[in-house]
Image (cartoon, rainbow over all chains, first blue to last red; front, top):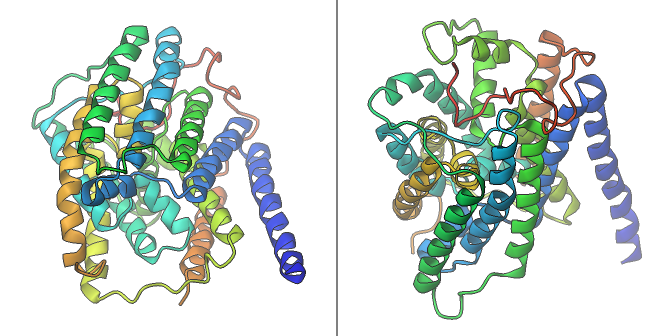
Length: 370
Length: 54
């Protein structure tokens, strides 16, 4: 026992030193704000992987087993962020921005498709990044397609929004807090009534995760001036790759806009969502490396159709999340917690899609049929 | 194959992307925004999945 501890601690000390060194290197070579945002991303990765918390899993647990604990935690985390973020954004409008986006046909359809695809690969935006960091081969295969899909979705985004959308509307200030908390409570009551007997409580692990995620989301808002997001960064990585390979993006109203061109040309570590995305993957990798035996488990032997489904689902995750103005993080979590109506519509559409996605997953060979 | 392989490959690819991008477009650490956006007086200007470019 003692020899095992002697072998483990130098490795674990090395992991802590590596994480601190990476953050300090970014602070020195890029900027202090960028280093802080990487640290926030690391915190997300450590929390989500360390407490085995996410979005796709709790939705699946509610749909298949009527276990609402994880979804209670989502509502709690969103409520905690809303209580601080909504008055803060109202007081410092301009410096801080919410995740306000319009509701439209493409947005609703995109959220529905995203809900299907995230249950097929069992990972949303943040979940896919966490799973990649912890060595999940399905997410590892899905991530490049997710990035390409996000890039392509942004490429065509204005065509889709022209199909019809309402102006971006939402709530703000203390009245917004009251409305958001009332709506979250109403959803919690529905979940409680739909939950299986004996499963209607919030587990401690989920409670701790909700508190940590909300604190990190607020740190993201205060440091970056914008809420936590994921999919923009992934599309930017693909756009950078396409440009490096000589692609001409001038045919896209999105990618040819001056601010998009500037972001494609500047360093990836200056992009807010890229920094937190990198941090999430690194944080999850650190947790998986820390846990004894976590990276030693064998990857499943999946049939070819499962890998094809993973690639298609990855593309759909990326494409649909751009049409939907975000994933579980950018639209559901950040949208609702900063008062955007589209976050609620996204929730309803994506949950409906998830109900279909959990049925598709075994048929596509990604898990044994019941 | 164990999960160590995709996990390590992902980290290698991430490092390769960051290094390649750093060489292609090095940032200037002497041109930094305020450490924290709150209280900086500057407008929020980062890319976000919920916003469209002007």
